[in-house]
Length: 181
Image 1 (cartoon, rainbow, N blue to C red):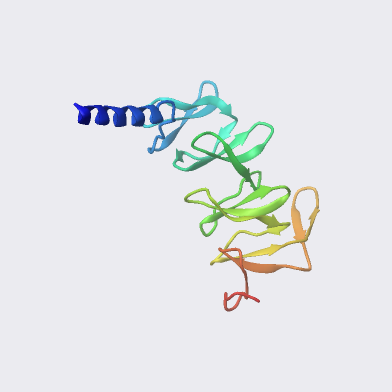
Image 2: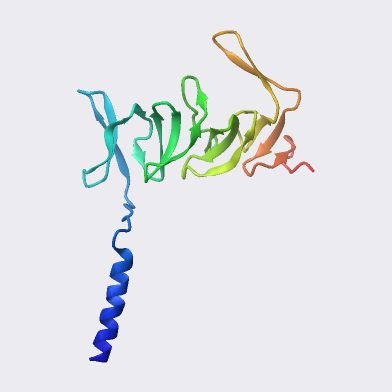
């Protein structure tokens, strides 16, 4: 009888700890578009709408695993997590969210540019650059200070202090791709 009480109490404690805690859906969320209303949302694999149609102006991620890029009114392009929280602002390139290059895309915070991982959405290089080009062959051209010049249609970044970084955010020599000290 004593053994039964101990088992009962253990089961009770475990069940009370899990009550009210969100159950995380490990599956994917799938983009839903209602052509009649022109609205976007996300549903789970069981077909239940998880992020309501119309919450975001546009959703750019069709299969939502860890993060999605959406257009949020008043905020612009942002990355959101599975709990619908904003992770960061996505760098704008050619009137849309930055495209992935070499497994990374650019993000913005406090006027600075950094990089997030395309597969996971995690920030891999915190925003710290005034100007930052996409990664190509493992390196990216960046500057801590720069100016933007525009002719009305096209913009150009100008800096006398460009340097290159690797995917760890470490300054590197472009020829050897080795750390610069």
